[in-house]
Amino acid sequence: SASRPATDETQQMVDEVRPQLEEKEGKKFDVFTAVEFKTQVVAGTNYFIKVHVGNEEFMHLRLFRSLPHENKPLSLHSYQSSKAKQDELTFF
Image 1 (tube, helix red, strand yellow):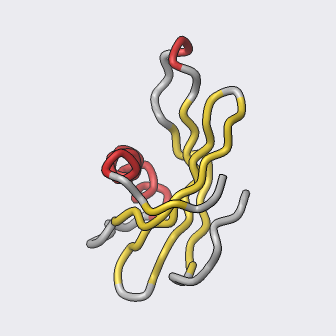
Image 2 (spheres, helix red, strand yellow; image 1 turned 180 degrees about the horizontal axis):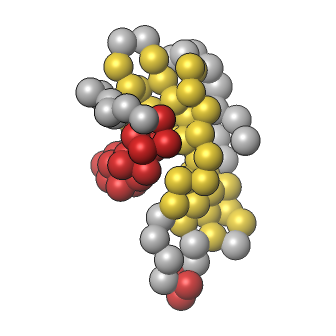
């Protein structure tokens, strides 16, 4: 889908996976604000979300939400660090 500004729901999603990311990165983020997102429908939905993590630093997160009947939690599939504000969200 086209890139859209982040919503309250998008922010709730990144807040939900923040502990997973902080554990993988081995650090706590002072700022963790969803900026924009794209979606991709598969057997569930992939969310590609640009997150501001402080100063001029951004990360791109790929989250996966399974179909409702599978009853699985939202998961952090992968992420890209060292991104800039102007970097386009792309499939990864």
